[in-house]
Image (cartoon, rainbow, N blue to C red; front, side, top):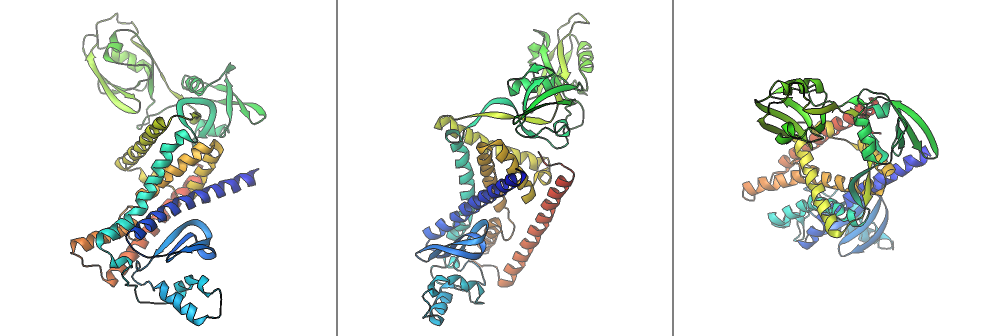
Length: 469
């Protein structure tokens, strides 16, 4: 079973990467053709050619040995590129008696020509705006693919309804759920003998049990067993326990807008670490201005007003620390109308950019970045969770590919656009061969450093068991 799971995981990741890269390259390809630029080769995969799919116009379509995406070869794009058409002619002249001679145009890659192609259908024979569109088309196509996938999930694979199931979708690294051995797909059927029928009920019982032992009845396939776990208190960014409001007495705090589920962070600027502390501070301020900082749906809100005078010992709220097993419940999935599906896609893409902005603002991009090991692990989680998660992951990766390729790093699409910007500033004067070579080497160095950093991240997370299970 483990071998089959690894094979399934590997094949799924390869298929996803191939679809994403081929779509990206197709963006370059189609705009190049629309601009009258010759494209000599459109290949699926890299390395040695396995077979030729066919030929249309000047473009050959090939399948290559390494199934890790694909590429397009645009005539005249590289400064030291040899004209492939000349190589084809050479092959035909030298092998006139060979009926397959016309089938091996990619020999041009190894013939050592040094004269750049400068025909009217070459890349650098076109105006700057057309070249920019060709380069920009790849990231745009990656973004469009991700956006369309998200927008069509509602009418195909289904989307989350907002409800959850009493089934484990993920166990966070280092959490109590991972410690006791919970896995993706485990169904928690009861907690302390109380039957559990929904994710909401499961989460509520766990949240109410900070630092209290729980006996979980777990169903895994055909096997049923019990696990004992003690939910750990949820902590905020400053490592203080998060206090959640349970009920609010009518009047008083309710009039200020305090709601069940609010997380109390401060009272009049004092950090809150326990329910007793919150109660004490509130009872000290009858008839006085009060400022309660709460987290509501992950956003900080300040509730301000004047507390009415009440009996000194009267309770004003009931609150408790939140207990966590650091597991996520499976989301209930259902199909919806096309309109709802597109609304979901718009919201998801918007949330993706908000999440990226948050990572940049809090300088946590490096912590969140992942390489091939992380993607392999994430693919395994998605495969176990089902098709909607696999499709959602593919859409997210496609948008990430678009954003990454727009970085102004030489060898990436953003690097090409940067050189075009320099050319525009210099009023059509391109970088010299020496400058282009230095630019390229700088880009390769940056990519190499990023690769080392990201792979180091992956290895550290793997060794310290910090990857989600």
